[in-house]
Image: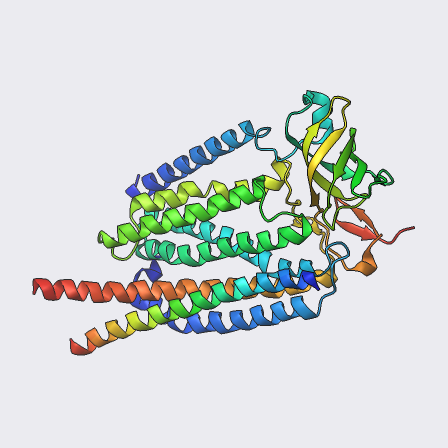
Length: 241
Length: 43
Length: 148
């Protein structure tokens, strides 16, 4: 991994990769979304509202995946002192928070016509809201530490916060199993899927599409931070000069 | 038909969120990389 | 031992400790964090009449009866182990039906009937087109078979 410690080598790969992730990701999101809206049949119980599944599930997956990424980056920063890890952690936070918010909002919009409520304090919803607050806390800490001259990355305290916050991820995942909840149990498990194939397939497209898009945004934000670092370092040299 | 209002609202929220983040991230990157490129030209 | 390895062991030990502490706290919370009581919980622990709780379970097939006033409904809620009668006046959500999940907010009266002030529909993890409705579903294997 230290092969990519050199920003120039990282950028050589990141520059073309940004577009290669972004455009196919966007295309898959649009195709998957259109199929989910117009091609798949309605659900036997919920009717048309089941179509929210095709964005709600990828948003939940990336909201949780984002924090897993932050935790891995934090581990790499604290243990291996990888110079790009801190920057990656900071770059993941914004799209991760966005998807957590989208998950909560689409879930709320979905809950009203199916369950009969916009919001209930059950285990799944509460733990997902906690994840959003964790993201906001991480972003605040990361921005503060970046201002204190952490070379665009996050401080070790922020990284530890990212690592500790990871405890919420298995809690979210198991919340519908451990506790009685309004949210239904998992549909897709290692044993298979309880979503009929006719309804399931566009989810694969949007899941992959949003994931590629997520990767593209992380690369864009890492490139932004690296370029800002370069300018900053140059300014400091001039000031001393 | 009322069900479609909820579906459209959910898709609209997602489209606005991802669209905004796409544009803001790209512009921030574009501006930062141009500033960095300008500096190396002067050097 | 290299400093890197020391940091790795330290970080992993801290991670294990955090996850252990977190899971321990969560498992201690198990009952408190439950969003609703199942009929079996009510039977086992007893809930005093008048105490505001949520009751969740399946609406027993054939138990749903509408009173003459048109807005009051009576139905039985079961979790497979115990069954309790419930009553509700008002507008139930669209997905509220026999054989489907329900979470009712309210309290028990002196005779042990649950007087609901609000009904929420709880659906299960299955999604399928209307043509597949009525197929036998095996919850442990997720397999669907045509009805024999």
